[in-house]
Length: 325
Image (cartoon, rainbow, N blue to C red; front, side, top):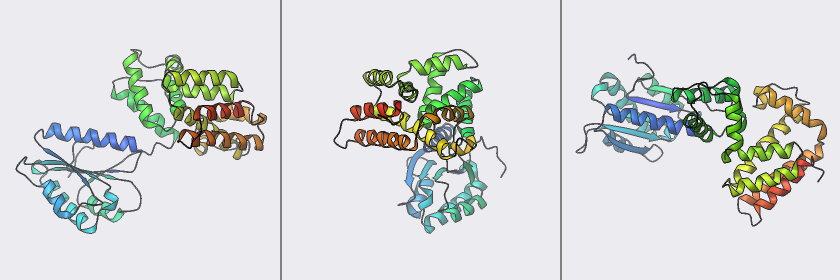
C-alpha cells in the first residue's frame, strides 16, 4: 500500500519522542480521523490491561457506529494475544482501508515490544517516529515548524532566543510561539520583538531572575524574583531557570574550560562562550555550594516544610557571590 505520510493511515504507531509532542500528534490524528469519519465512535484503550476481545470489540462495528477511532496507549506493554489481534486487524485494514476502523497507537520507542512493532510494520502499519527534543537542532526545528503551523515565519536568531530561554519545556515553547503569532503581525518574527516579549512576559521572567543572579546582581535578582511571584510566576519556574543555567555552567566546567561541542553540552555556541567567560570567577567549591543551594530551594518548593521563597533568595545570594556568600 503506497500512501503519503500526511494522509490518514488505518493503523498508525507513534514511536518515541517528546511527551508533549506525542500527545499533541495523537490529538491531531484523532481530529483528522474524525473529520474523515464524523460518525465514528472514539475508543481509548490501555494496551497494558487490554485483551484481544476488547480490542476486537473496539474495532468492529457496534450498535452506535459502523467504525471507530481507537486510541491505544502503552503499546510497549501489549501481551502476545493482543499483539496477534492487532496484526490480524492491521492486515485486513490495509487490504480494505475504506471499510475499516482507524487505530492510532503510542509506543515509547524503547526496546520493549520491538517484535510487535516489526510484525505490525510487516503487516502494513505506518510507524511515525517523533523527535525526543533533546538536541538543539530538534528544538530549533520545532520552533520553525510551530510558526509554519500558523502560516508564519521566524528568523533563526529569534528562534534561537526562544530555545535558549525555554530549553526542553516543549509545551511552554509551543505556547510561546502561538502567543507571539497572536500578538504580533510581523513576518518573519524578529529577534528584537522576541527579546522584548520575553522580558515583559511573566512566563519568561524566571530567566530574567536567573540572568541577574549569574551576572552577580544579587539584590536586583531578589527584587525581580519578588515581582515575578507577585505577577503569578510559580517558584518552581524560577528554580527551574536557576537549575537550567547551573547545569550548563557545570557541564562547561566539567568539559575542561569548554573543550566540548555545543551538541555535547546541549546548548548553543554563544551560551558556551558566555559560560566560559563566567567560569574564571568560580571555584570548584563555589560551584558545589551553588548547586547545593539550588537543590535546597527545589526541595523546599516541593513542600519539605521550609519556605521556598526564602530558600530561593538564599540560592540567589550564593550564585551572585559565586559561592562565597
